[in-house]
Image (cartoon, rainbow, N blue to C red):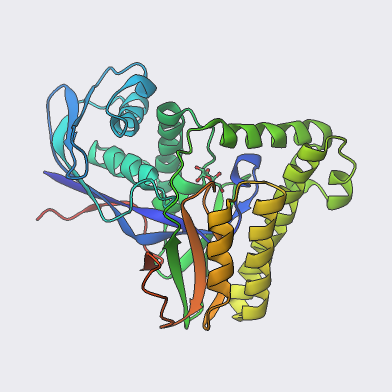
Length: 336
Ligand code: GLA
């Protein structure tokens, strides 16, 4: 028997920057996915209490995106990348809300890869998971979700430089808690919107070179107004990651509040991935006593809002939320 666990993630700041080699500041959380399985056989066969149909994937699967049911695509993506022998039979269980923007798919990919015997380092595990996700979903996603899940450090967020792939743990101040609030709005990331945003960034980079090195004065010279807004988001967001890293080190709550508010506004106005539901939820949260700051987290178009709150701040009962702790990354668990 083998047991493998991988966490979900919440991103504190640095949204839609990873696919341009930018800066991100996610943390692995104490909600995650466990695969318990027995190696053997010529397929990967997993059951989940959340899913009516099992994932049954032949080891020579050719097109992960064509597999059904839908959740089996992520398993198939890993099998197609890892080409394991033998297969396995087992079960998946999760404490993550599925499809809510906390990277339940990345957690599934990494737990499956570890259960199938993947033995490389955290970066290699994340890269395998990213390729599996891209093949399964068709979304040209960046490395953030999988690298946060693979490289998590207890008590710390992770500053990731998506150009060098260097991961620097950033301790969260005592007295600040991270709360994830579910908007209830669901939208598949596998829509054209994510890819469209990525293309706009590529157009900007064709004119300016890497956005990571661009200045606002350069961005202002871009001709197309939409491309200009998308690029402005990325350039200002990279700077906000550095601002939040410094503000966490100094426990500077005013600066945290400013950066999160500006980040949300930029996703709303420049990158245009927010929704009225997310905007209203952020406004409501930041008006509450004890809430330091809040913003939409993840790809947008629904999903969750992340809030930094003073330790022990209660949130209203009608808000579906999780108090999450920064946790260690994906790993094999001792057998029971
Ligand atoms: C999704 C992608 C990530 C990242 C975020 C937005 O979660 O999978 O790579 O681009 O959106 O920051």
